[in-house]
Length: 116
Length: 116
Image (cartoon, rainbow over all chains, first blue to last red; front, side, top):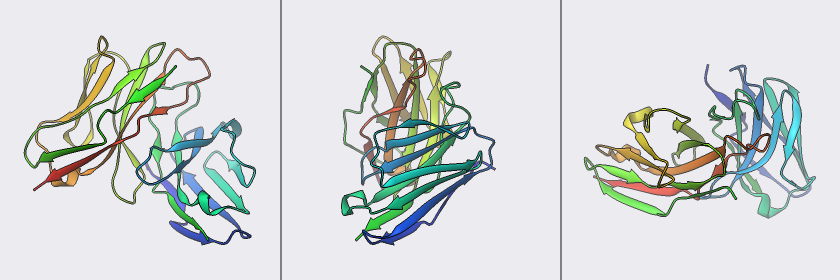
């Protein structure tokens, strides 16, 4: 199984709502990532978890809260978002981080988030 | 500073013709280079990578890339383009000697249009 599964595929939320994005992989990867991507732009790294511990937080606003319950799951909790947070949110995994930096990342299909 | 440049926003090619998508990079240590493709409304898919060894790397869907150390380039190529190759292509690099600072640096992307 070489899939990274993200749910939901689409999400519309109001600025006062709380929602969560979910990501799952069963490749035995020990590094998992959240990226934000605007249309026709490269993905922007948000968070990296390595061995279930938060390794990198790219100065992301606190209205985004990541969680890694176990080595296969990654969540992104959303609260009080702004319209400019509307984007494609991508989850990815790789064998290890920062070791094995030569390994490629596997990406999910993404969650298309719209904040109204 | 680490950087990746994709000098062309858009590449147009006729079906059946060879295609090239250009990428140049700048890192202080040994580069780990990657190409990813993104089809409309989808996540990113890994195409190929260069770690060490042969300068010509073969990847998925008939794509290959040539690593040129003196020109610090890693151009993506395909001998005969298909309409289904139309997508957004991203080049990315990791500095293999950067210790724990091994974040992936992304190019801005090149939109490939293959015309029937």
